[in-house]
Image 1 (cartoon, rainbow, N blue to C red):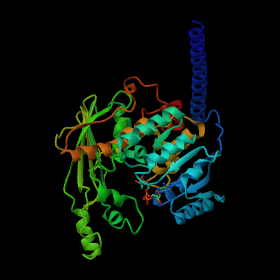
Image 2 (image 1 turned 45 degrees about the vertical axis):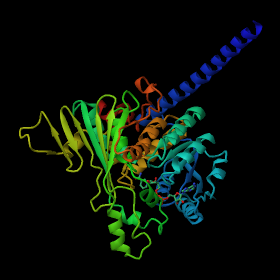
Image 3 (image 1 turned 90 degrees about the vertical axis):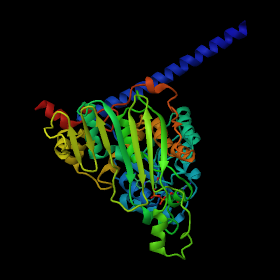
Image 4 (image 1 turned 135 degrees about the vertical axis):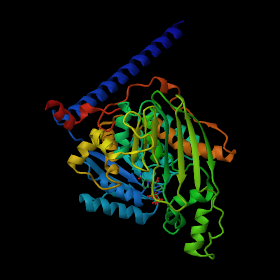
Amino acid sequence: MAKALQKNIQIIRQCIVKFLSGTALFLFNYMCIIILGFSCKGEIKVEIIKTNFAVIGCSGRGSSMMRELSTIPGVNIVAVCDIFEDRAKKGAEIIKDATGKEPDIYIDYKELLARKDISAVLCCTTWITHSRIAIDTMKAGKNVAIEVGGAASIEECWQMVRTSEETGKFCMLLENCCYCRDELAIFNMCRQGVLGEIVHVQGGYEHDLRKEIGNGREIRHGRIHNFMNRNGELYPTHELAPLGKLLRINRGNRFVSLTSMASKAVGLHEWILKEKGKDYDLADFNFTQGDVVTTMIKCAHGETVVLVHDCTLPRPYSRNARVQGTKGIWMEDNDSIYLDDDHKNHHEWEPFEPFRDKYEHPLWIEYYNKGVRSGHEGIDYLVLCAFVESAMYNLAPPIDVYDTAVYMSITCLSEQSIAMGSMPVPVPDFTNGRWIDREPFRRGKYCLEEVCHEFFENENMEENE
Ligand SMILES: NC(=O)c1ccc[n+]([C@@H]2O[C@H](COP(=O)([O-])OP(=O)(O)OC[C@H]3O[C@@H](n4cnc5c(N)ncnc54)[C@H](O)[C@@H]3O)[C@@H](O)[C@H]2O)c1
């Protein structure tokens, strides 16, 4: 009896501690949100907290991202890492040139993670190393952002989710395409209901990468090994993440199942024969990755999503986005729109530009006024700002671990579907049921759930006029 009473007291005590620490965390986050909100309106100047960052992966992408990252106020890059020493040294030089301070160099990322003075890590390694490094980073008590790519297994996605939940650290997929000008204008239009109820969306990663993949071993690039051994939707997130946000995935909606089909794989073989000759050791290699992989995803609320992966045939670049609702349709490839109400001629598209101007996202209005940076037409800087804001104040990122897991999972699920003759496969619910009733999202400039007008000076100025 006494033992039971003691146990009950212990449980109650634990509950009180949990409640108090949860409340404290909630209040802290809420205060930061308010301060950030005011600061964006220019009413209160928020203090920039100098924050130590590290970068793991210093090849092409890592180099360009660390250069941008180093220019964001408050960011202090104290360490860089790559398994290739020459690349790590080059990364350190980039930071020294940009900031005058040389970061420490690491070959083993675990040694870097052991440092106590680093708050957040930017991971720009290969597709099959991102999640492992993200998990280790969160376990080391640091927030992490990972470059884009698909998952190799569902298990790694669950590990990312569970580690984030257990450590309280975030893992943000650095999907720069969520901050594209057109995508954000369409997002703004959709949230205002201009396209009506959304029924179908599609997108692709349609990028002739034969040279990069075909020269993969010579340039020590990670992509080639995937094309030699895998067959699936290898790179879904550029198009899928903006569409997923539009469809409120993980917040009232979710991907339920998918089916995938791959064409034959002949593009790389032909390119290698032409460019490298029949004596090249991969001249007869049987690449497994189909030239065109098409994936179809069904959502809980009935929307359909079509993704196309197309990287080994000649073609101009496109993300082939299309958003279709009950009142109209937008298509990226012909940069045009068609709205039910506006049209007299039912067979003609209208140019999208005037609509983009009318529905420009306030983030882009502000960005234009301040000066758009380089790096994929400015979107690299925006996604890094979103990451830094979350890391600096320890706030929920706009692309959280549930988003990261589900977008990345499409890759290995499509591989499974193709391996089974295009059988439908279920998409896991990484929120464990919470997608029907999640905690409120964090509002802010970089928010991808809604357009948070209250955070933009330009809009408030207009209101005041
Ligand atoms: N968002 C974009 O617009 C965009 C553009 C280009 C590339 N990317 C993505 O960025 C990532 C990197 O691209 P990349 O072209 O630089 O690839 P890459 O293969 O050239 O470089 C990856 C680097 O990571 C390093 N690395 C691998 N494992 C490591 C480990 N365990 N520890 C430390 N370093 C490790 C490699 O040595 C290499 O230098 C990829 O996921 C790619 O898809 C995104």
